[in-house]
Image (cartoon, rainbow, N blue to C red; front, top):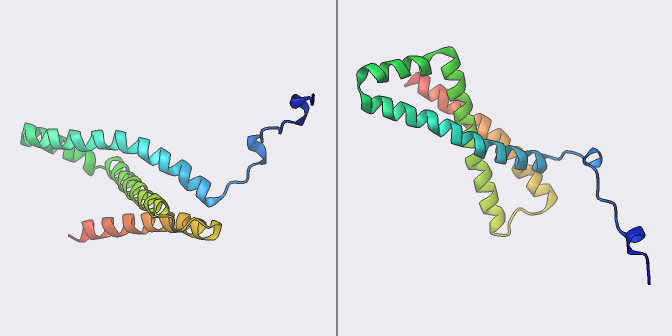
Length: 129
């Protein structure tokens, strides 16, 4: 009988993994999903303030209109778009397309570039309008 414990593979340690774009996007997709939960609470707070009357709405709008508030809203916009584009990427993968390493890496970079570009574009349009 063979000694199974000596022939078993050793589990790779995290120090030998090389970060690749698809791995980073997977981690970011999970983080953005969790962040959307908190960000949605801020959206709910804004809607409740609008329903509570002009005084409450003005107070919340003043907070969201501050530098820190706009920075948080900018981040929320990026998180929302990044998670959405990551979901579209996964939807494409569910159809069986784009699974090759080269294509999946391109999708990962496109998710990042698309989310950043769309965020900036939305904020530019928002300031113009």
